[in-house]
Amino acid sequence: MTNRAQLIEGLETSAASFGAAFKGLGSGQFHFKPGPNRWSIAETVEHVVVAETGSGKLLRGKLIREAATPELIEAARDGFSRVDGRLLKREGGFQAPDFVLPTGRWSTPDEMTAVFDETRQATLEFLKATPLDLTRFVMPHPALGALNGYGWVYFVIRHCVWHIGQIDEAKGAPGYPR
Image 1 (cartoon, rainbow, N blue to C red):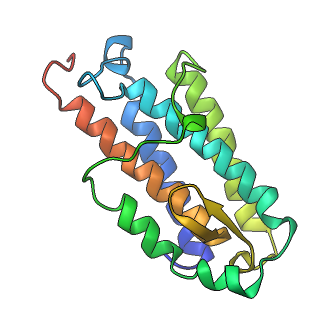
Image 2 (image 1 turned 135 degrees about the vertical axis):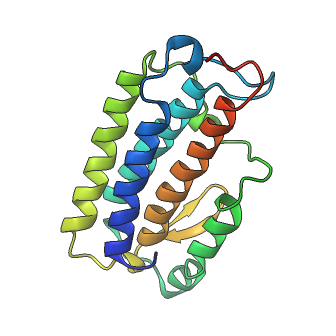
Image 3 (image 1 turned 30 degrees about the vertical axis):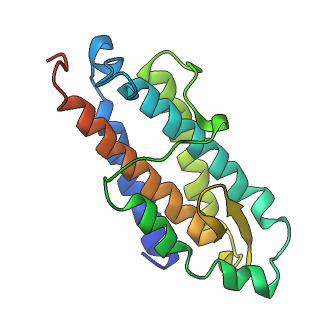
C-alpha cells in the first residue's frame, strides 16, 4: 500500500469494515467491557474517532503548511514499516496519549459514526484532490516518529484496522451479551 490509489482504497475499505464492526449492536453490547483494564466497544470506537479526527486535521492542515527538510524526509522514509511494526499484529498494546483517550464525548454509535464518516470523507476528498507530493511533508507521530503525508494516511488505515480487531476480541470475550 505505497501509492495514492492504494491508500484511497485502504481508507474506503477500512471505513466500511469499521462501521460494520459495531453496527446494530445493542447498548449492552456496545458498552460491554471485556475486562477491568480493557476498553468497551464504545470506548474503542470513540478513541478511533478522536484519533481519526486529529490525524485528518493534521494531514489536511498543519502537515502541508511547509515542505520538510531533506533530513526529515529521509527520517520519514521507513514510516510504513514503523506503522506495520506497531499495528500489524494483534500483540500487546500501547498506552494511547491522553488527548485521544475515551472520555464519553459521544453517547451513541450513530453520533460516533457521523463524526467518523465526516472526517474520513474529508480525508478521502483531500487525498483524491491534492496536487501535492505528500512524501515531501513530514510531521512526527507521538509513538512512531517522523511520518510523511502518505505515512499518516497509512497510520490512519492501520490504526482503524487494529481497533476493528480489538472490537472483534471484545465480542468474543466471556460474558459478552448475545
